[in-house]
Image (tube, rainbow, N blue to C red; front, side):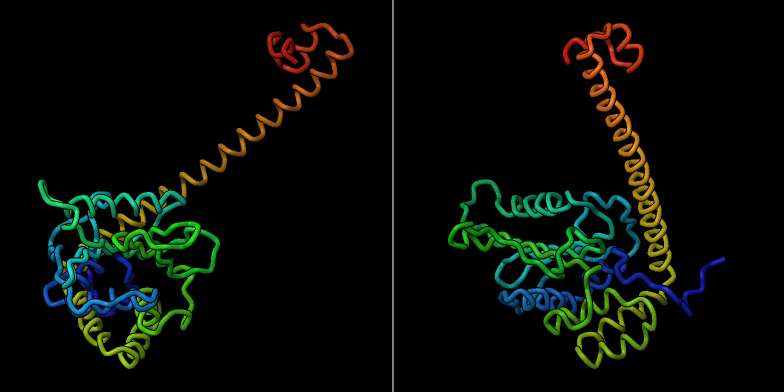
Length: 292
């Protein structure tokens, strides 16, 4: 029996299948451009006049092979490439992954035989639903600077990290603040969307996209598959963390016991006790005791 989505109570606006539809479906250029410019404005960067989608939304494609796919990719009127990724799970090594994707996209800009002046900036915007660190920074922008005099080497690398778990209303510039309200809303969606439309006209288009999505059974089926896949990944990560903690505790106890045995063996050796007796009482080998 098909699912009935007419009275949906929970919808994850960060589901990457939905985000791809929202930003890269046909006719989404204005929505995509507004989100990009909102991010630029919040970090004091220049905005863009237009954006051409390079990864059009594929209605039926299954995106479970997440590791090799950029969520949304577009090019602006001045040739800058913008890549947008949604990440619901990650760890402290995630910055290396972001840099790898940036480098992969940057290296593809130059065709064989072309000069370096053919290169253009690549801007990476990353929406994270986890915290990279303990700072209070919601939106961070990273570029290449001289560590001594803060001189910018090049504007070709620009990495934006937006940590949604840290978001609280009205802490950012109004445009990005409005977008993050949308991505973090859980309950009272109609009420929140009504407020967002009043704050920012483009949100009326976003609301239409959202309504079209939840009314489409094929897209909602893909959404459900993606949610199940993400939930399964989360369960596995939590189990891995739990096992890792337990293993760490076990190894810590073993190391502590070993250190304790070494200390005791050292004192016994000072008392000229036989190596065989020390070995039997502490569990250390004769060779280990001789080295003390």
